[in-house]
Image (cartoon, rainbow, N blue to C red):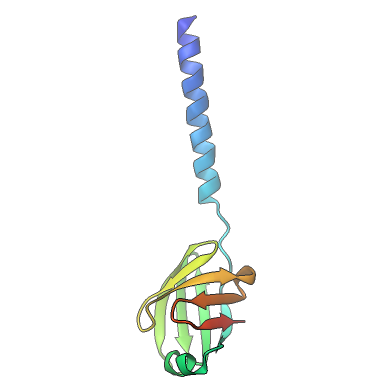
Length: 110
């Protein structure tokens, strides 16, 4: 009788942790693939590029600007992304992936 009371709470706790882990792992990532225009700061956009084509495979991002510069990055959550060289910036994703606000002060809009 004592074994049932000890094992049951342990089983319930383990099951709950497993389901929480599955829910976190199943977080829906936004689809960032597409063509973006840079704004609103035209000076920053002249440096980084005026248009960007982004392709996405899972979490991995690849971006190419109108200057033929390419960079790789990653979707880090449902609302954030990072981009490596040559831009080295972090971004906040809005409007279901239609807008990315970057830490360099630029904004990419589909």
